[in-house]
Image (cartoon, rainbow, N blue to C red):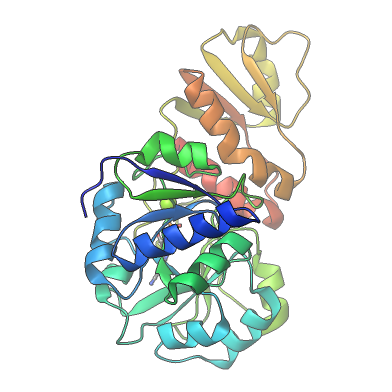
Length: 331
Ligand code: AMP
Ligand code: MG
């Protein structure tokens, strides 16, 4: 399939929504690429069992073929077909956190082409909570491989507009289901190794996982260091502006010197002397902050700021997902 125009489809109740959902499914079954909403960020989907379609995902994003994709399923039954085995820990975690923002890495079933997992023997699997994602996977009748629907190293998309900005003309369609609610990518937990290990922090935190399956390996030093997860580039989720991470005191002290080319994302209230910076007040709650993170980065990028000064949120586990993304944005 070669793409010229990207169709805009809408997820909604009623005849138009029904027609558009069927169209999205038809494009996917024919080997096409369709971006769709999940509760975390928009995904760029292809049928996971179609190696050619999966290769096109990497081309459209400019993503290195060694970066594994996450396979999205509509039921636990379907997850079991994607994994070569389904351990007790997966059963318990799925019962507690699915549908939701937790990806389980498990041995890959032979039916899943190696392209999906960047050649690795293990594959990431997730059952998303967004009704559009589930309806689409069900309609296609097959699991969908889907990374975030943005060009490689760009900012992840949390709306159909963000997807269009990055991938218009490179994919068959975008299914618009409104703004995403979680706002950052899923937590990735490796269950293919002896000791379960968090590869990427997200909305589901380590302590919650431990309540269900006992001890898991966390990131050394919290989220301050990039993880060894395959394909997780140190610089990722990155805006075009230069990103500087600062403690609250340091940011407050610098605020007066900011000129109009600077965007500030801060939890601390804007001080009276804050130069000409575009000051964006960020929430002091990690879930609310995550929901706004990429939307704010996109807006500041669109506004053409040259530098972004971002206050580092507290070094607490509930903030791990947000801090990880901020460190990657800063590269
Ligand atoms: P994205 O699809 O852009 O949200 O990124 C998916 C990320 O999930 C990858 O970059 C990896 O960090 C992680 N991941 C997915 N599948 C695997 C796997 N088989 N093994 C290890 N990490 C994985
Ligand atoms: Mg991504």
